[in-house]
Length: 421
Length: 168
Image 1 (tube, chains in turn green, yellow):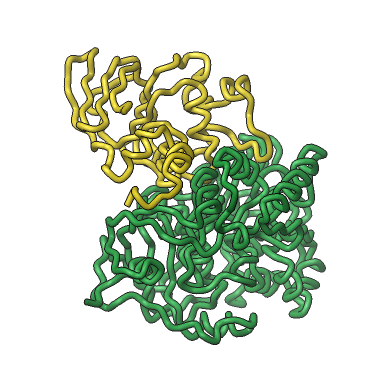
Image 2 (cartoon, rainbow over the protein chains, first blue to last red):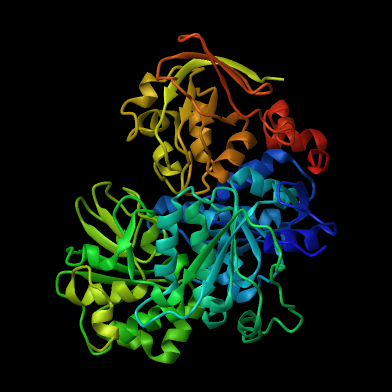
């Protein structure tokens, strides 16, 4: 019997008995992640549970990433409370500046096959290295910390077979914007989005984390990429991965649906303001005047994202009337950009470097939008009010499109620059 | 076990995000005044004032998508929403609602309109529209989830049973 999807394989291994889509199972949790905007609620629930011991406290870390550095005195006081309470609970505490939970976890500690529960909807990002990351609310997460277990229904899977190679100026963000537009914001509710196919071999872990991260925007429970030599090389470069085995779905796994993506025919995509699933080709909105451009977030704040932006901006300048904000997903990303020289290129072009963290995507600091302002950002969400005033407009694109648009100050198809035309 | 509810319906459209149910306030827990003024305000202006305790929401597809914030179902419950029906739920919202003791079930509202009086039986999967004299089928609450409803939420369940195991 070998006809399992990736998520069935991971859950079967974690549980020690065979599971099938639709089963409701109680499972041990390997890691729990908390973040500063939701952790206080988790702690409240822990108080209410009144447990003498917290089974998973040692494998739980609170990352201060949403409001870092503190934008107000009240948030600063909140952070201090979170630090004190984390220590009292025996929970790890990352005081901020290290980066976004999802990115730091993948860089430093997540392993393929693990079950990771997080009090943040983008916990699915770890699926880019074959870890099963699932976002949950405060009560679920508090129970995971207290009991070291969680319950879930084994999801049905949608396979996305990826073939071919991306052309210059096109990224996995464009692939996902098209897919999110195709599926819709709740088109994959409860399902596992599983990426397969020969095209994956040409995609880096940075690329794959985008695939997994944006699974959340289709309503999926998780997004999973098989574990292969690319994954192993990424982990090995970070001192892990020696004993990581390949992990892929069985050839005759049962899927609810099959979708096919030919990377070689993808176009640069953009989401119109208000809905992240209202996507179209960049050319359709070309010329739209922008006030602010943000490259960063847990979706697109990795070294390769900034390097791709730097390749476009090298020797060029950001247009006078726009600001280009750079919000790296982690301190490690900043280090990499410093070493590669991309940071210098971006700064010379006029980019403003923000501290590692969620940055302007949270809508409380570091580039809050005023009434009627228009922002092109590389994050995952763009509903009214996400980044400040509800009348501000947010468009979503790849870092390459964002960089090209920064040069003209209007929405711009990046192939104008990357094709050398 | 509380599985029968009678109340007045509020119909809501498809694709309501958690941030429309309750606008994002990252670091504080909103007080009751703030809840009343902001909850679903952009969808139904004045919702917090018009809502009466015991009312039932019947939403379209994808109710509660977006962030994982438990504050969204909690806001509805605090304002007095008795239960939430939808043609489809975002998965985190569905879990959160049941976890905090806000009953949630999936079903098509048919001809039901805002202001109708309905009676819902979550175990049988039946809705009786008292205003129109019609009956609708909805998905009964799954057996696996029913213990949560019985205990009034996940915390109460864990406090009583000390484990999740008996749910599987």
